[in-house]
Length: 280
Length: 312
Image 1 (cartoon, each protein chain N blue to C red):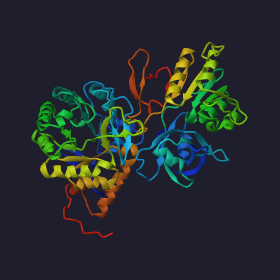
Image 2: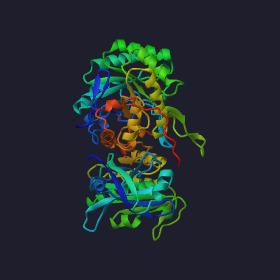
Image 3: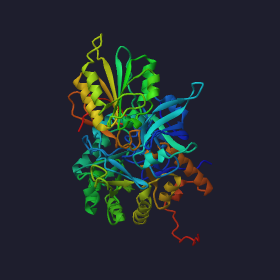
Image 4: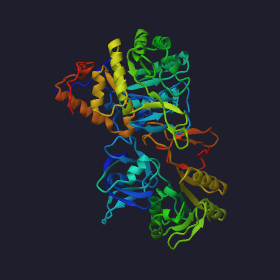
């Protein structure tokens, strides 16, 4: 379905910390079309600074009590001018929202397990993916790392879907009632990969899904390759249009023995086969 | 009676003056899902050389006040793949396709134009002699009056298609380049390409884009572009396609009053891919309010009488 462009009213902007907020937007037509892993292009409406919208994974598809789709939310981390403005929005403000855009994740079904690997704001595409996987009864684990325990969010949401949590913090701090391993999220991931093997059918035991900082993505893709598990990676690039018009958001991709090509992550991604991405 | 939005670029008649600018609209087909391509006056392809090009490593763009700097580096599929893979689909979509032609030598410009002459469905060639982002991308022709004259003369001999050189603003006197193009037989000129620009990350002291320098576009450049169109309009007789930071119908009309026969919209596609129908509606509304039956009557109708003093 083609994307739609909506001047969406802010329903809520829940500040999760001094940097993170969940911005909920009244954009039912975007929500109805969204598949896990797709993104929206967003900026406050009616202003020219910022001029361009910024890409955000759809965090949640919002529903009312009757189960009807009412909009989408994004997980916003205050980093630059644009994300600062989005962090400061209040209910009733209006946001230009174009989407959904891009290639979604390909879900897996039992007996293959799903291992979602999130670093920081890279949690964003995994709430919708988790719902989809839970619906298919796919055994799912979330490997989730953050700088501190205060920046681990939505843990109850994932637990209520029946998802196993493996948490890491860089400072070794623990989340409320939850043990966190000190260090990077790739530590526990590698331990799990070592024991993964293959499923009874001879296929890969798990599909690894990754979203987070570039060094984490590279490490996860290489670990998955080393232990022979398939991997889907959601990349983030500076993006101008989200539709394939500007050629800003390219990533090097290699199919088989071909030389690497720079492809647009907005329309050929943001989700790529981790084995096909070429790392600098 | 419905307002007449049609304009003529030499032998070429367009149903309206709105054209999608090169490098801001992919190959046009990317936008098919949100825009009816037949509704536009024309679509200009990304710049094409004979062969495929990978362009510069990212980051390739950075946002600046009311604009953006880009150095994509003319990533493109080459003219042969364009003719085979894109042009038939553009024809099917009813687009009037302008092909932006690049070259590192005059011979290459000529060869690319010859390939396009054999193809079915090319409306015109926009000769890219103004990309600021690669060393061998035609800017050496666009910054020299004799270079401009020579490359335009050469391609005019090689093709029957209308030739529209795209001029750079990074020269002292753009109008003299429009005149050189006209003297060489150009059917029209388009202006302006982007302004050479640069942005530094003061925290890291590094450039904000890989290529260090790039081309500035967006509303920030509009007043300079309008001035340049006006200068060219006073010096040449061939039609002018104006561009630079157009966001709405008002901006488009400003360029037409300054002398543009048609206009291109570039960066605004990124801001609002649904811009086209809004600008078309705005043009019709302006024509109704000002009792203008034919939009071509607006071309160059700028009145240089000083404005009345306004006291704030």
